[in-house]
Length: 132
Image (cartoon, rainbow, N blue to C red):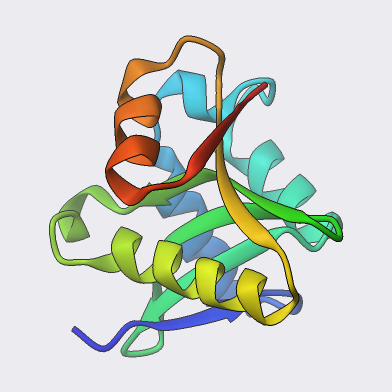
């Protein structure tokens, strides 16, 4: 599946609807401290943090990326439930890592403190984990 990864700054109406669908499938811990998917999406767009995966003009996955000079932190990674298991999340992670390296930075995963699934994923990918 050729997923095109892009930093989303000017979403179309369809993009916004797709983002809401992506994060509607997210567990509550991924949305926190936001009360719902719409708040998370709006803040991500406002702060320029959304990295998205697109296939056939539709967004299938998204993540937040916070950047500084030495590390990028990728968090809130979510893929639409109907699309999971097809490599969308891996493509987002790989492209985030590639872009970070191009900027001379490393990539780390961000997750709530004590979240074992995120810790296992970070270890599997050879990435550091930032608890927040």
